[in-house]
Image (cartoon, rainbow, N blue to C red; front, side, top):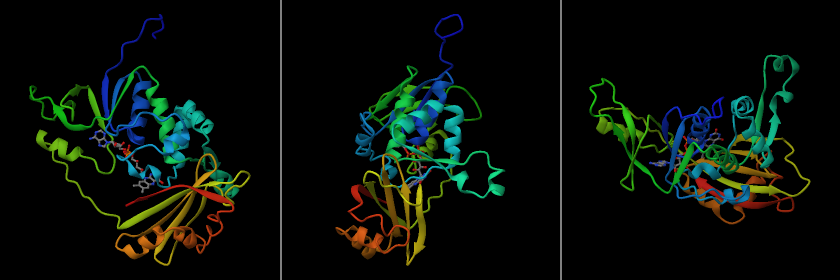
Length: 301
Ligand SMILES: Cc1cc2nc3c(=O)[nH]c(=O)nc-3n(C[C@H](O)[C@H](O)[C@H](O)COP(=O)(O)OP(=O)(O)OC[C@H]3O[C@@H](n4cnc5c(N)ncnc54)[C@H](O)[C@@H]3O)c2cc1C
């Protein structure tokens, strides 16, 4: 609403491709700056009705959502200063703020403004962010439809290619003043730009590691003795870490070399993941079923 009470016209129309972390963040920021946003997500996933339902979310377009996620302190700073309501909702949804600065010696801490991090499952963060981003009447979320190309302005003789919208895989299109592509690690952006004369050389490198992640929930009254990050270590050809999350959950990730199929198969056999964890310093007591029970697990590369 304007100062006179009249409805303010949107400042323009933005098409955002992908409702992962980047696309949701862009949608939140642009809609709050007064732009109309059409957010297009290929996964046919309506918003789940709770944090726990979000953990079962079908997010095949972003399979990393069920891997361990730690968040840089910068995220906390941005939420606190620009989107305090989202930080508040995240905490109400069970995320935990950890003050890493408080662990530092005084002489180092003096020069650091704020060093808090958020502990939350990636699905929890995405759920809160999607609710916050799509609440605005300026935002139109379209799920279950993918973008398969970009529209370019072919009439003007501009020296630069002017993208004016997106083509969808249901054979419709959406015109927009600007397009933000946040399509994740397997983005088609370079392929979409090519027919419009824009050549973006892409270098794709495989990490060579496979992540095996399992989530657990602490029994009531228990906490992770080491705080948000229990341990992160590399021993005997494997790296492992344990990251605290929301609502008493935590995840353990063991990263193995992708070529080591034997170790991967071994870790996937029933009970073996926990047996290996019980031999790894720092996480050796965390998978004892007396204390924590399995919530879910996932694999990714
Ligand atoms: C195993 C693993 C662990 C990670 N751990 C961390 C961590 O601890 N901390 C951290 O900060 N980061 C971590 N990351 C990185 C983090 O997950 C990514 O940086 C982040 O998800 C990128 O966000 P995004 O929005 O660009 O893409 P994504 O979150 O991947 O979302 C892309 C979205 O675009 C949609 N999409 C794709 N193509 C189309 C299309 N044509 N039309 C419509 N929709 C489309 C997909 O369905 C998806 O929803 C990890 C990544 C991996 C793989």
